[in-house]
Length: 133
Image (spheres, rainbow, N blue to C red):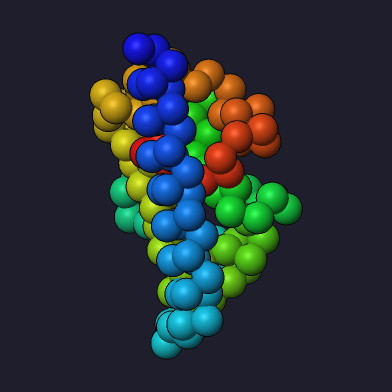
C-alpha cells in the first residue's frame, strides 16, 4: 500500500515537473514591456511586502528555482535571475511569494520545511522544480 502511494506521488511529481518545463519553455520567449529582470521584479515584490532581510540568489541549475526557508532566500536559475521574459518574471514572483508566506508563517510552508529539511540538498538530487509549493 505504501509503495502504491509512493508511486502515485512520484507520477504526480513527474507530471508537475513536465508541466513546469513545458510552460517555462513556452513563455521564455515571451517578452515583457517593463524590461525588468526576474531579480528586479523579485526585489520589488519583497520590498512592497515589507521584507528587507531576504536576498535573491542566482545559481546554475536549470529549473532548480526554489525558496530556501532555512536561509530565507529565493534561489533563481541564472536565466530567470537575469531574464526579462514572462517566464523569468513569473518564476521570480512565485519564489518571492514563498518569502511572503515565510513572513506570514504560512502553515503549509512550515510543513514543507519540516518535511524536506535542507532544501538545497533536496533540490540538487530531486525534481528541480517547485512541486511542493
